Length: 115
Image (cartoon, rainbow, N blue to C red; front, side):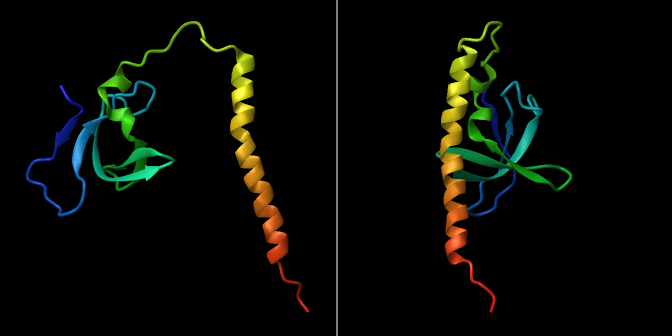
């Protein structure tokens, strides 16, 4: 059975609107049906806009409603050594630090001195 269910008798021209079940086991809403009212592309990944009953909203990566997401199972023994994970963390942090440095130096150039 598909995790997607279109809402009955609901039509809003040009807007995405359907129900889906969150299948990713590590998400707090796993197993619950959510109302999807929009979609955006962010960092090359499709995210779905989820509306909540209390009026709030949040984005959920689209892959978290796929059947494949429900089949992901944790393993008892990690497959990557801790040192490799640290290397990966350091690599991922590099662009962030470089970008922060650029923003700081750019701000210095643009600043005006009060007279």
